[in-house]
Image (cartoon, rainbow, N blue to C red):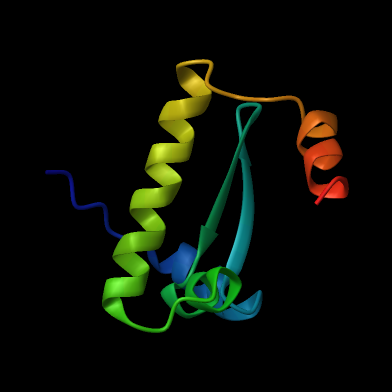
Length: 82
């Protein structure tokens, strides 16, 4: 398993930008954030909640790749009818 390490520059930038960075590298965009910011944004407090949240994100991305999606307007129509 790859275990990437932050550079000193990345650490300093995270500190200066409240724990979250947008990186544009050769036309590809990335978000780098501290665990604290991630937990707050995702509403996960415990390690078990964090693992569950990450698993749900992986499942959602796999669904997108497999074409198991619905247009947003269809989802809104269903929610409006409830």
